Amino acid sequence: MYENWEELEESIKQCEKCKLCKNRTNIVFGAGNKEAEVMLIGEGPGADEDREGIPFVGKAGQLMNKALAGLGINREELYIANIVKCRPPSNRVPEQDEATACLDYLRNQVLLVKPKIIVLLGSTALKNILGKEYSITAARGKWIEKKDIMYMPTWHPAALLRDENKKIEFWNDLKEVRNKWKK
Image (cartoon, rainbow, N blue to C red):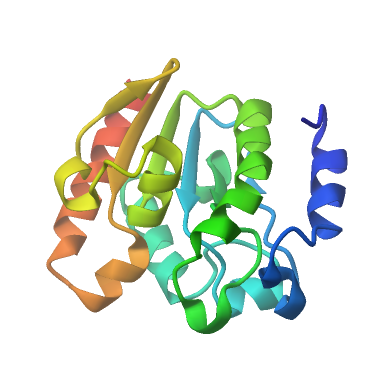
């Protein structure tokens, strides 16, 4: 484990633990407040994120930003990361070996940030963080506490682009997070 952000980020830049490194433009390390009380974890970078090296800057990220702003949450107050740091081809779901190769980096980010609340954006984040036995449809919107961290599983913002009906549930889940965090 790395004691500081610089060493951790440098190690990820050099990473060749899985095949995703072969086609990356940039690693997508993470962004935001490195002392945030709330951390968001997504699946992996898309094309826009790979190009810019910043998580959630594409259409799904823009939608997420609007929801956060509507709830009075500044994105810069949060820390945002992904299960994998390199873009899977064609934005496919990361394969298990790819996720496993990156999980120690993410765990290190969590240890450095020390969040009180982690929002798990979608099934990939949920299953890789809390376990394969969880289903996003069953766990979404329900608080789960583990190791002194409160987890809120919710839809990945990309799912909202495919199914408008999920927007209200996503909004309500983020509202729950805001209410627990800002009380």
